[in-house]
Image 1 (cartoon, helix red, strand yellow):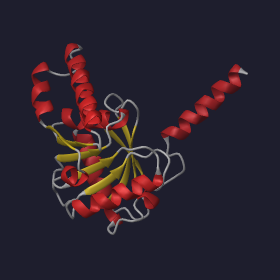
Image 2 (cartoon, rainbow, N blue to C red):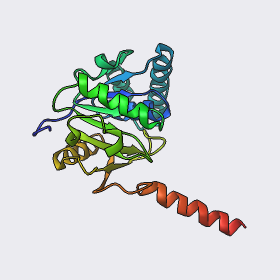
Image 3 (spheres, one colour):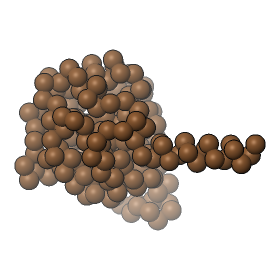
Length: 211
């Protein structure tokens, strides 16, 4: 696990709405980001979206326009997963909610990343213990559940699995706080986490009131 090391090099695996929003958050927080997808067109689309969002933020006065070019310069892209995670301090898997796919990505990530690299999943419904089932060192696996849209919503649920080391939790929360997010520490896995359960309860109440 990281010991006093400041996590600066981030790999984002997946370029959907969540992946690109998470990447933007880390870029605006001063990190170097390697964006991975198996399709070049998907990476190009994500890069264009991140730039467009930053320009809008600049126009709204939420980001200095002089910060945009340096932030985009910190963004690299990789078709190969091994190239994306090789130098990463922190990896975020942000693919679809497919357990077998996530397990495969975690296994491949561990094979190619550093011994101290933290491997996080953006899952909102699956267990980190199950996702990391094929990982040898599960002490460095954790959930970081970002709320859509991730580049706007400050809260990020940080969930410690049964095998997750306390140092992994601490380092993850410190990283998120450093880039301006509000980490919500969840000490053990619960179905649906916190925010999803609250949202579902609100939706259920709204439906009852409407009826």
